[in-house]
Length: 157
Image (cartoon, rainbow, N blue to C red):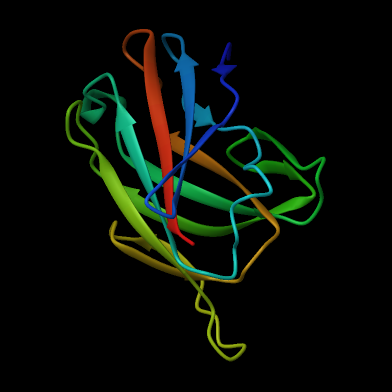
């Protein structure tokens, strides 16, 4: 695995936070993992994540967009199943093609009621609020070619 994880860029458009991270993978990489999200993302209010690959990933087998909740500033994810100071809070199955981004709307648990969404169709996840997150595009087979995946988070402040 030889991922290049770009730093999160941060902009504000009409009082809406827009974060973006590009992850570059090589042939046979099966995990496209972002760096930990910036502190500006507020896990206690809704946000959306858009996963946009530069390659048609259907040949890479099934895919899931995993959202990991991080409870320290030094949290990291080495593989799809090995996190430090973080826990898997949602795994959203997806069929992602180039030019066909996956969009997941993340809602914080309400009144202490939280449902972990595992292997759910893309669309909605209700998860606990965490201080930070890591997002992973988890493929059942590796990339067919070198490819970039752009992760974009949008949150109305």
